[in-house]
Structures are given as structure tokens and as C-alpha cells.
Length: 356
Image (cartoon, rainbow, N blue to C red; front, side, top):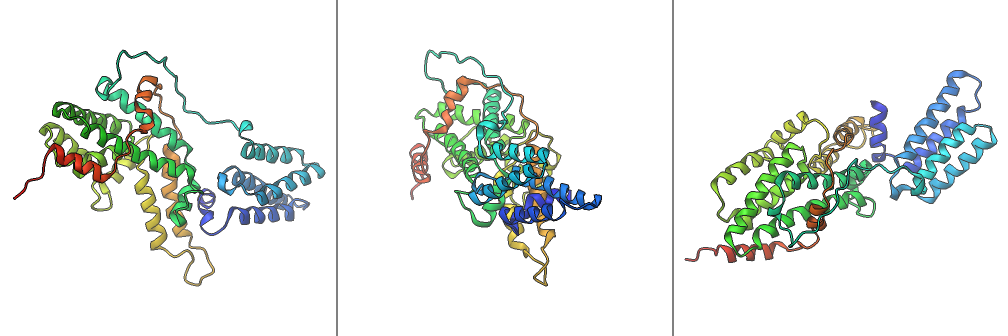
């Protein structure tokens, strides 16, 4: 477990290149030893090196690392360590040649698309099916997320180094704007009410699927001022309060954290709170201990526990089937790019503010 914590958090005090250099040094130092125990140290260093290479992100695959590892493969071949050379060569091919790397795919079956007689609306689809497709889309971003990106983001918020995390957060915002637009756009109040009710029912199924990220995206829309100020059915407003209490930010999101602790995978946690927790851990702790030389591993252990939650929840996959009709309707939420001012003005058109 301590090795896992180290591999997950070493970037907070070492660069991947520095760690690779240290592991290469350790491997070379003991690889020619006659003592069995020292020989074992060499093999352990090599195994750890393979793991480090496997978990490098795209932004970390710099030419200097590539050159070092290619030299290692050549040296292994010269020394007759063909098995080790083959292992490292295969790993390099996986990292630098995507065609050689087995791609992890969500286990889904694509249904044959139907030809609708008219343009589909949200009401045409069942709430459960909509929640399933939203969860599949969310899970696709979740599976592509590389854990080191969260460490990098908590330190420097560099979009170029965190492409998957940026896409994940943009997807969250798209879902929220999609919900706001669909509810506020119709001129007919009955249609607006139907959309509002529909989203409340979708929330119920998202909660059932432990898709907390999409759940929070829709809740942020329903709780936004342009929508919450309007008049909605009492029953649905009461139903929403249950979900609002789940994400109550008082007591550091205690209710949500307790719910997440009891959740069974597959599960998609709210990424915003994870990033916030990591920032608090970094700000509230010193990188090194008081003497200035020793690494503060307690801080890294806290970061590891946060990231381990992400790793644990994404191992199983959702068993849902892709529905091309719904996915075509959602269209990656591309046509819903309004801003807060536009939403507020539209809300005032629906229900003018009182004037004295």
C-alpha cells in the first residue's frame, strides 16, 4: 500500500524523469551482483520502472525519457536480458504507438438507430434511459482521466498538461447549460414545467446509478437563480430538496461524503470536490517536515486516499447499452452556449421582477 501511495503521489516532490533516473541507477548498481538479495533489488527496481513508464501521461513523454529507455532496451539485449528487454520494449510501444496499445473500451452494445418522423424532444425519451446515456457519456470521460492530471492541476492548473481533466470539467458545464437552456427556452409554460419535471425524474435515476458528477451538474442548473426563482410544482420542488441536502456544503459536504463512502462501484464521484480536497491538502500542509530535508509523507498519504477513491470506483463498467437515438439527440450538448446574463434576462421575460 505504501508503494501505491508513493507511485500515486511522487510527482509532488520528484519529476518522472528524476524518478526514472534513480530507478535506472538502482537497477544498474545491483544488476551484475552475485548476491541473490542484491539481484532481487535490481529486479524490483526494474519492475517499479516498468510501472512508472506505464503511468506516464502524454505530457510527460518527453524525448529525453524516451532516449533513456531506448538505451536501456539496447543494453538489456547486449547483456542477454532478453525477457526484460522485451517487457520494456512492449511498454514503450504501448506508450508511443497507440496502435500497439490495447484500448480499454466501455463494454456496450450499440443499438440500431431509428428514423424519427419528427425532431425528438427530451419528453420523448424515458427518464431512466436518459440517465443511462448520461452516465455512459460521463463514464467515458471518467475512464480517460489520468490520475496524475489531478495532482498537476492542484499544483499549477495547467490545461495543456491536463487535457482529460479539462474535457471532464467542460462536459460538466455543458450538461448544466443544456439543462438551463431546455427549461428556459420554451415560451409555453406547460412545456417549461414538463422539462423541469423531467429533469427531476432524471436526477432520481442518476442517483440510483451513483453518477454524482452528472447529478451535481443538473442540480447546479436547477438551483441557478434564473430557474429557481420561477414557479414550479410543489411535489417536484420537494423532491429536489432531498438532493440539495445530499450536496449541502455545510460541515464540509458531510452528507455527500457519507453517501460516497457507502457507495458501491461503478460510481462517478463529483470531480469538483475532489479537486477542492486536493487543493486544501496541499495548502494546509508543508511539502517537507520542519527540518526541511524529509518529505512530508503524511500529506502524500492524504492525497493518495483521495485519488485511490477515484481509482477504486472506475474499475467496474456500467452495463448499459448505447442508444444512438438519445446520443444523437444529446449531440454532445453543443448547441447550448448561453451565458449567465442571457439566462437571467430570459428568466425575467418569463417572470418579470416586481417594481415598486
